[in-house]
Each structure stands twice: as structure tokens, then as C-alpha cells.
Image (cartoon, rainbow, N blue to C red; front, side, top):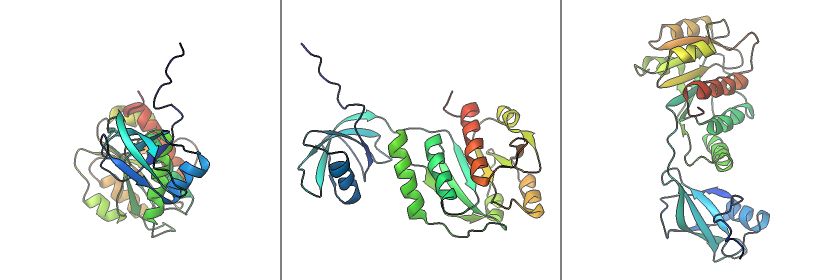
Length: 248
């Protein structure tokens, strides 16, 4: 007798939807999401979709009431609880479109809890499209299996970030002029942390001095080469997750 196929199948698509989700909750889907499920994934009645809303964990749902441009997904069983990611903030200066999108996407995949845009003097961008960045996070979370999204905070000027810094949270400062080797700094300073990465042109001398004077600041070196802002943010975040995060 053939074995009963596992349900939901590992190949089931994942979708971020409004919550809250619970057993028996019916989620109507239309627009781009419906187009993806119906035209790309060829959903049929009874097919499985994994849903998450950022607050209820992940739920397996069955497709039903399928029409040309919409369908209904009914939650049946919770497949994952709401995640608890490490207490790590990425404080990053705004950079050009495309590059900041990449940073936000990879920060979500890496398990960052909060993304804090920080306006600095040499930033070539002074505004960000929050809706576009949230869409990047949703797409990344759907792909990588996260059950929640990072918090995307409003952009703040660097002096305001520093003046309101929370005591007890390490502020790892990617200083192109040098600092403690990154691996050594992460090993010596455990607990709630943040990483501060500047814009393409780097920090001014005044900004660098103000950051170093901040309680909790730990200047770090990212190696012998000058990295692009997006490379520095992604690489250092990955190294922190490997040393102190949930990769162990």
C-alpha cells in the first residue's frame, strides 16, 4: 500500500498575508498574489499554501473557491511558531536604490530583528521608499522561511541615534580607518547589539569622533580591503550571526 504523501508538501509556496491566522481562518487572495498562485504555480482546489503574517507563526492552508482572478486559502494547521530572532539591529546609512534594496533583502534573510536607516552628512540619498523596502522584506521572508518581518524604523539623523542610544546595547561601528578585528570584537562583546555602517563616502571626522564617544561603541575593522557599504553591512551581519546569533 503506497504511503500517504506528506502534507503540506515541501514544495508548497509561501505567502505573507494580513493576520491574525488561526485554524479555520479563511484568507481571501487577489491581485498579484492570486496571479502568482493561479497563473505561475497553477493552484488547484485542495493544494497547499504556507501562510505567515508576522504574528501568528506559519500556517498550512488549502486553496479553494478558485476563480479566474482570486481564491480563498483556509488555514488548517500551524507548521511553525512565531520566530524569535537574535536582538540585532542593522543601522545603515541610505545608499542608492538597488543597493539599499539588496541590504534590506539580505538583512531579512540573515535574521536581523530591526533595520534602522541613519542619515549621515555624506549620504547621497536622504529619502527612502518604505513601501518598496517592505516589499523587499516580504519577498525575502517568503523565500527564506521567516515567520516574521524585521522592523523597518523611520530614518533618523546620526546625532539623534547616538543621543538616544540604549545603555547595554553594543554598537559595532564599521570604521574604515580601523578598529578591533571583527571576530575578536564579536567574541568579546556578547548580548544585544547593533551594527552601524556608513554611506558610500564614509563618515566625516566629526561623525567618527561622535560615534566613538557613544557609550557602547566598539569600532571594528572589516579586513584589509575597502568594502562597498552594502557589502560591509551584509558581511558583518553574517559574521555576527555566526558568532553570536542563531547560526550556531
